[in-house]
Length: 297
Length: 242
Image 1 (cartoon, rainbow over the protein chains, first blue to last red):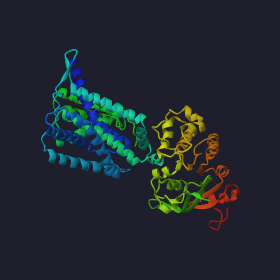
Image 2: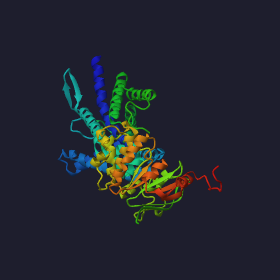
Image 3: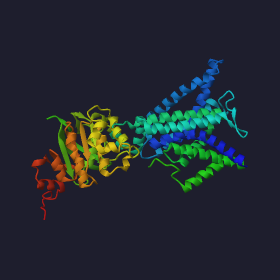
Image 4: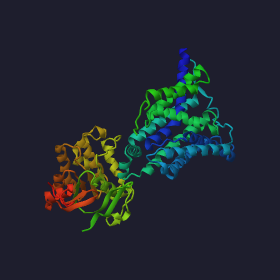
């Protein structure tokens, strides 16, 4: 019994690592500019499918070089940053303001467009990224336990991303600008800061995180164009549980969500995700500001 | 004299409500000019218009002869106008030093840097890694002034430096002014305390209901002239004070 509980806890934490990567981009964009990106899930899928397409193209070009996909990652991250930067400059900056509705409508619209675009290009078939056996590899732990290598890798990346993001926020000049525009936009501009450019950097970084999440999701399981809203929901629940604007909060929120879902799965295979929602709603009732809120207003 | 900043018939609106009704204002290089006026006279609105927080017609504000009205706040900051805002408005999630460093965003070279600001306000050096919200009101005001100086402005605007501060603290803050002006800084200060304003400034403007009701050399204006312009009571509608 004890063994099973510990197993569940561990699986939950590993799952939470993935959710954390889903959520960090959302947390960053909300924290810096109070923008709720309702297309988060679909952007994650855009990352997944970009990788799928990129790998297919590489295979076609050089059928023998199996290590080529690794080269794709830095390129993909660069493209993601550029895409996020441009999206913010050309689209999202125009709809930011005191009223949150325009940005919600625009990102919601983007989510529908992306979903249909992916459906058109890739059909509704589930796809995944071939990992050369990494997704089923495991390491043996003492006591006869086995842990998947890929989930461990995902958790490590989630921890690194959270820590890195928090460090950047607290100690770099860019992070200082992020906090300044978040604190008092008017005064930040009065200091000579170009807020729209700062926002574009934030979205660029968010898109890099989103792409990492998308690629890992496609490595771990299958993705299909209609998955977006569910991914958004997990990201959203993680951010809300943890508290808006705190990356540490987002990480803990994601881990909690993962563990809760795993406990649900323990009772009944159909209960996991539902159980996560219930706990999320209960937490909203008890502590609507989340566990570690940072951002005000 | 070449005007550093000049406004000509400056009008400003909050939505449909007009707040400034044709302000003619000028400050020359190296001057210390005070703006006084009652609450709602348009002093802070004037500051907002000059710093780009409120959109106005381009030609209504001239900076070194160039129209800057309606430019974005960050562009105006880069051209050398810095504001110490009313109520200080420090960045609450930034510590003291980080707040000061925000002044560097204007990317202007000059004599002011962290070292100089810490020389001017030594207490800030001691508290440089503390949260800005943990400081006293006077110390926060020092950070706000230091933050504006860090942008090496050609013109420093101070909005109600003494607001909400104890007299002894106000004195301490104002004692830094000569050292700031010694570098040839041009200063425009909005001040509610009329005697303070007269004491520190060379010239003085009095605003009333969005217009200039009086202007002149501070030392030659009489208390009576000022109180008339300030309150606008006697003779305005042909009636004398009781």
